Picture 1: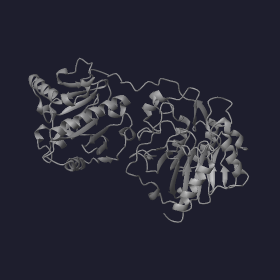
Picture 2: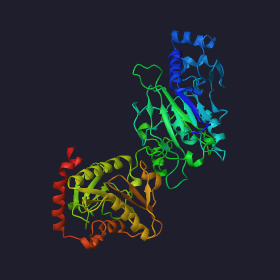
Picture 3: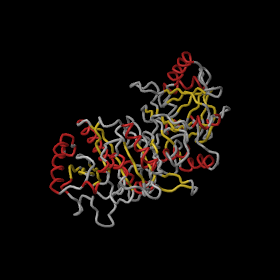
Length: 532
């Protein structure tokens, strides 16, 4: 990594177990070599007589920390007495209190932003709590700099609320874990590493990106790591070692490299969803109390978090008759195969193949990106059930959506026999035929949410292959309405070009009823809606 590489250790709540921590650090350094820095988040001091006695040995110089150690301020009222100044100071040889909040920049250029304590729930704020003013004072000078790209490291005691969105789940109660203000802070500062503690848990979230795919230039990824307390009985991880080259010393191309397991940013949602869910961008069931604040840099101050309508996204009302709203008299109910809580499955009218189906929301939604989370979940359940169903018949599952000149979302799901072609052939056919019509299909990175690419109202065409690979085209002006069918019906794939237009494949009502009944019986073992 070059001469600029720093070796850093980070620790969770020490809680006065100084000997345990520093003995462990000595062991690590004896085995792995010297580290440059130890960062401690959470409660550094303890509340027992034993921890007080240990601290006195370090304070008087009888013992010395084996590495330069930087610690956050009090995370509880009981330990405030150990911090003589809010501005930071040396507590003992090799042990430095960073301060209430600020940015520490080392000689190497490594930039560490930090906020001590917990979020204040009342005014005036207790000494172990931070306020919206603290966060604003930290963030504003950084983000107002036109060259600001993010910080190398962010240290907080509390977790950011909702950090688990789009990622792996932590072993904590997510209903009451973390705060929205720390989430907002992390979103603004874009740390490459964000460390927190106080929950008694170890959690390493999958890295998340700080840009919108296909809409913004690539930026570096962020990693959130929560650490347990020192010498905890469950032996959960409390020390984390890593190498880091300061951002300022890195080539931009190296900095923005995206790991394979990168996910969407957990703190961002589409504009429409934010309005429905509250300004913090969090799920309504996990909303902060009304007394919480978050900062708004554009207004240069704080404001209470919105207490408006936090109900989940609700379906719109159709502007006229809709052939696909299940409650509509226009729906041809003999085509319905399965009905869930939020979605239903129907035989496609004039289908490419006998078991070509549509997955549709029961309420009126125009596209996938406008769906409420519970509707998305059930639609995914139907897709998974169809995947298993088709696989049992020796077929692969291809789905596509056209959000263009359509009023109600229709997810088309078409089975393709395994012996007809490989998934790579299907992908190539879509790419080639799009190119022939001067359309560029983009491949969406893994773990990317379609909502991040196509805000509500965006016309698009979207394909998902049985491997999970996704192709996307942002419709500009004109788009062939039968494009998805044309590709699948082409000689290279199903080789049924005459069936590309559904109007050429119409059946009588009796034929449709017979096909629906056959499909209904065949799908029954895979229909989760029948389990309730």
